[in-house]
Image (cartoon, rainbow, N blue to C red; front, side, top):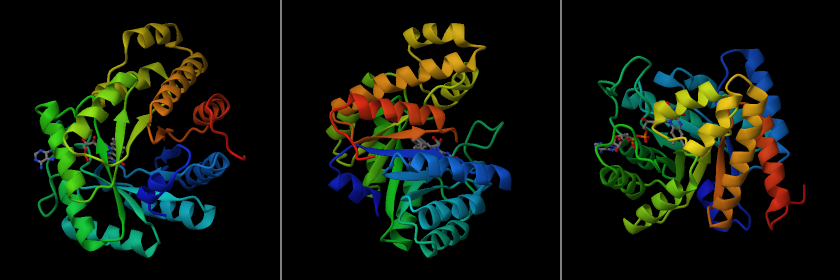
Length: 297
Ligand code: FAD
């Protein structure tokens, strides 16, 4: 099912889980077990990322089609412009279509490790909006999602300009926006009102990353420009060398974030799982108990 239809017809929040393709066959098998486990929580869809430089191209396509066709969960492939010519991108799109994939999140991608600026492939595309245009043209039936940045993309010259480019992505065919991770809900609510004010009417799905490791989350937030509020930093400091305590705080914080987001109208939550099922499962199980809607299983 196209995820835009899922959001349009939902009677409950749509939860989704993001995974990255492991490097080895053992890792892949372990991930598929994790996906099956989390599948019991009935996510609306599962997404599989596209590694830096297109390095996971084959594994992304293979995993996303196994999740859809063998495990039976709705799936979304990530696709970036990094290191690919237009022909390469068309080939990936054709393979995804042939595998019956109906959803793609179209991204520009980050500069390769060590580089600070993104340099498009000589025969490739410079912006996610260009990729969206290509997908609309090549695969008109695909549902396209795009990335949005509550705290503004790190390379953007201003919040207004960044939002104008998001609006361009939507005009070119993105039907769902999924946000970068954030830890302060006011950032999301402010972003949604600014997006509505410039005419973006698509669902804007908050992206939530359960914290499991303090040093790791500091690294991620520095890279993607998200901030950690000082109250959360203070809570995390004693757990710097205690991953179990960090994960506990991460679950509590994410539950509180999700409860408020859903009560105040977010259409669902996209979880950056980092391929670990424990925290995401704990968060969802708590949410199902605490919020007014219930699921059969
Ligand atoms: P764009 O929308 O192209 O924006 C990038 C920058 O260029 C912004 O500063 C924007 O303001 C500016 N810009 C946009 N359009 C124009 C234009 N026409 N002219 C001038 N400037 C413009 N990365 C991966 O490598 N693999 C993944 O699987 C992946 N999945 C992600 C999933 C989600 C939900 C999110 C939020 C991010 C993901 N990323 C992934 C990270 C993403 O690739 C980076 O954040 C990247 O730096 C920007 O991608 P984008 O699609 O937002 O780019």
